[in-house]
Image (cartoon, rainbow, N blue to C red; front, side, top):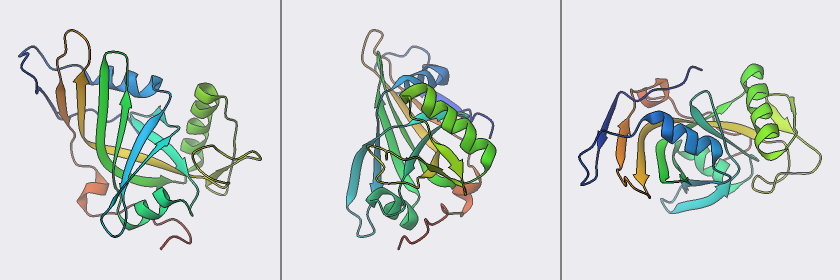
Length: 186
């Protein structure tokens, strides 16, 4: 998947300077040690958890065991939010999550996890496997999720404290496709 670029960007703070570049948000997402993932329970209540995430191919990725609450929520509704706190910029990404099963992407993301967290997994049967378990994902196997951004916010936390909203062009998932339900999730 090629990096997704925003279709538009605009400053949303009192400072009327130019919008922050999307690359700055991507750098924050690439370096953030922890992502916060918000999903929606089937009864409409929110669910927020920290996850170990990586930025690959212009999108945030994370893993979950299919029996985890986050995976069950995503099986019912692909809508989610990822947020990180960066050096001078906090980033919020609204989007839709989809499970990723293709071997080349799984391997690229596994390499990113190994590089960022020193977490080494085996890729097989369209998922990640390891012998130790992941601290935020439950026991293996782990399904990989990619969040296709629809809207992003970069909230400046240092001077210039300029904040930006990015809008992304619709992707195939916004045109009616849902995330692939996790096996066994209801």
